[in-house]
Length: 316
Image (cartoon, rainbow, N blue to C red):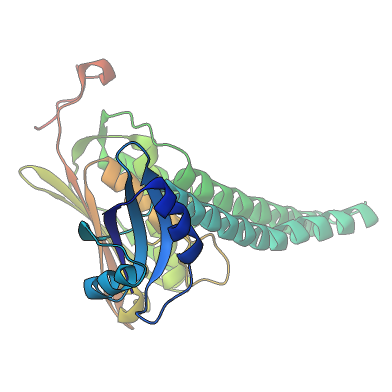
């Protein structure tokens, strides 16, 4: 069915009669009236109708003695109300997922504390085991909350001249890298005007994802390519790869293939890179590897944001 609007000249007295005849029911022409509007001064009536075609509208009104001055097909525009509804649905889904994911580490903390309270005299070896268990649970909660905050809070970027290698090193320091995972670092050094903290979040997420994709065994290769107007950073892993049927969904908010997780990590990475006027892409060979490629533009530092310009020289 299609929406139409048409216009008629009719008196106020005729309008009252028409109102009693026209309703929302579908007639034999397949037409139903959705809304009526009347301009008393000009004695003009406008109807919004749901109909199969324009000819059906003419027949519909001819049956009740009306002649259409014009008929125009219209389209319903979704307003912010629909957007807000979708946003509320997404927030509800996010809240439910976060509550589910936090339940497990909170249970670990609760059970561990109860065991420690019931056994005040621990051997030092046992104490270390339980403290490590608490730390892992707290780290997991912190990571999930940071994922949510990185995604929902407005981004305010501070562009300064940074050595990308330092940002990568800082990200790795925040990760527990298994002994069975080898990370190879770039052998060249490149400066870029960027937000250190935000790019650190991106690198941290991508390296953690790489380690998890390899089931904590394998190699992560990080490369930096210094081009004329851009800097390209690649993070590749020797993991299981990503099935082609889900590649297009990787950066969608709330999408995840993991049993736990908010599904916001990669969405946040994409948001941060785009705020840098850059782009992030993914390529993968199922059963072999996955490569994330980040392309960031070189830029001049805004004067108000310069802090150490005398020490760093930016290539523009």
